Length: 210
Image (tube, rainbow, N blue to C red; front, side, top):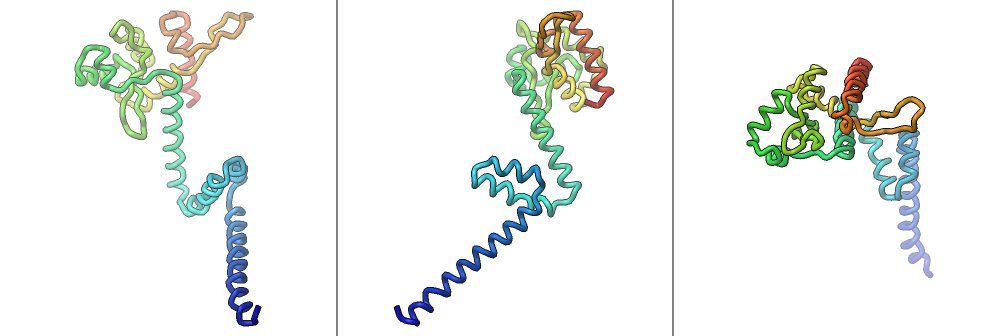
């Protein structure tokens, strides 16, 4: 191979190796900015997902604290909706008013009057109705009584969401010394003794800010 030929090949190779070295250096710097939690999470992902997760670090670092806090709050609310939806059947407005045999307007009026439980998806602002509150094509009377007893304002979506989250949570309704008997609270609404415990636990959780 002539000297001219060697010179024609070696510079591109040198540039490529230099580019790789520069990229490795930039990646090391990027990796150094990542938190321990991000790195430990990324290492468990497939390569392309791991790189994508690390790539977000620089973008996130440029956001203000206020913006990151708002994004974290939005993610938390989204997870809350997913958690409720996984623990009970949520009906949209159409399904709810068809079950009750009423109009959409009448459904809205009942909700505003505190006769029904409604869970609001904070991301879309859509209201959903837990199916457990319906029986024989009617709202269970205990639901309206519970909303009134706990002084929940039907117009306060956060308060109503908190109540629904409380009801889809589990409680151990077993006598002392008996095996654990965990059930979703909404399955125990028709039990007068359990209902008093549900009310007490709700007040305690509210006061504790849980």
